[in-house]
Amino acid sequence: MDIIDHIAAIPLFQGLLKEYHEDLTTIVVDQIFRRGQIIFSDGDEGNGFYVVISGRVKIFKVSPEGKEQILHFFGPGELFGEVPVFAGEHFPAHAESIEESRIFFFPRDAFIDIIRENPSLSLSMLAVLSRRLRTFTMLIEDISLKEVPGRLSAYLIYLSEHKDGTDDLILDISKGQLASLLGTIPETLSRILSRMAREKLICLDGPRCIQILDRNGLLELASGERRL
Amino acid sequence: MDIIDHIAAIPLFQGLLKEYHEDLTTIVVDQIFRRGQIIFSDGDEGNGFYVVISGRVKIFKVSPEGKEQILHFFGPGELFGEVPVFAGEHFPAHAESIEESRIFFFPRDAFIDIIRENPSLSLSMLAVLSRRLRTFTMLIEDISLKEVPGRLSAYLIYLSEHKDGTDDLILDISKGQLASLLGTIPETLSRILSRMAREKLICLDGPRCIQILDRNGLLELASGERRL
DNA sequence: CGTGGCCTTGATAAAGTTCAAGAGCCGTGG
DNA sequence: CCACGGCTCTTGAACTTTATCAAGGCCACG
Image 1 (spheres, chains in turn red, yellow, orange, green):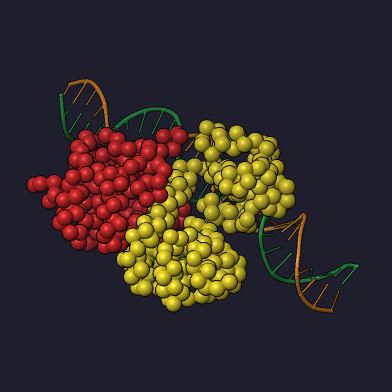
Image 2: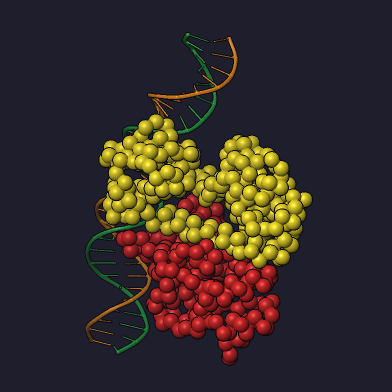
């Protein structure tokens, strides 16, 4: 598969004329990152953005004591690191490849030139950023307004709805990473999972398998009507 | 002062041809909100965005138990409620006028038409959204990775730097609102303020006046090197 | 078969919230 | 002019949630 095909397959660039796809081909930097490799760090200067072609990337913050808060996971077709492109200054968080990943890097200036000529591209980009703001709003709500069982319930419901809608869930990240995404630590997550299992809300079916037994109960936890 | 002058004064519309300012005049809805009035609610359908002309607006989330988390305060020249314009769906939070405010509302479709013809406007909008993402990233970091004294210190330092840089601060919001912005409750904020005063980090000079006595100490708290 | 990563469990401690009561401030109206 | 009610803010004590520290279990991989 050619580079131009990968570019044409990126949702952000759908609806862009082939001519511009070709332009992008000439400026793109094609990179491979290994598992655990840092792509950029909080505070680094950014002069372009990234798109995941294959693999997975996590975006996160770290406290001085070493605790980390994951902001996003991004997979194929998704872009990240775009804030400095439009707002200037530095990356506001770290990016790490959590498995072997192929990443395309698009330098800022050439990209801005293309956006100037393509209103539909800029609208797509505005949509991407707006959706991201929505995600952050929900994350802030979760972290600040719910306790851990509520956040976990909301995540499980989300997983179920964004997969096949069934009750059998397969975590695509480790429990340690899930803890970080939920703004807590592995010990706490582990305790709450077993408490939920004891209350027959879920059933733990192995390392990364969770079965939802009482969806309503989870919804009540997520909305704060009920405590564990 | 005419409506077109107000529109021309909005930073987002700087650099836009006068012709477009005139177009905007024909679609804008000029509104006054009283103190405490709700502008829109979390989940409402959004078909346009707002710009503060005068007064102040707070954007916030509310938990089922009634605790609120403030996401932003916006003042003259700033826009809000733009997420549904580009991402579709509903407002992700509530907006309330915290004093008598004059607000311009711009309906979505007409605005999108203008953006299509004005690359520089879309770049301005991208910059606005990117800055907002940066702000949210910092808010998440604060809430999730720092404890309340750290968040408060960071806020005080921020206030001092974004005003005149002096050590005498005047809060432009009530302590209750500040607590909500910091993701805590008034009682906790009050306790921590008096603890900081006891430790000679600050001096409480009346209802809304705080004097910074030990800026370094505050910086250490904000960065987590030190605990209260 | 041992080693390292990831996960679980327990005891303990810290931070923050809740509940309750009271202080200070201010505008209104008797 | 002073008393009243309604605010916001403060303080105290009990309680809840979560983090920390420490130990042990499970499993895959060499």
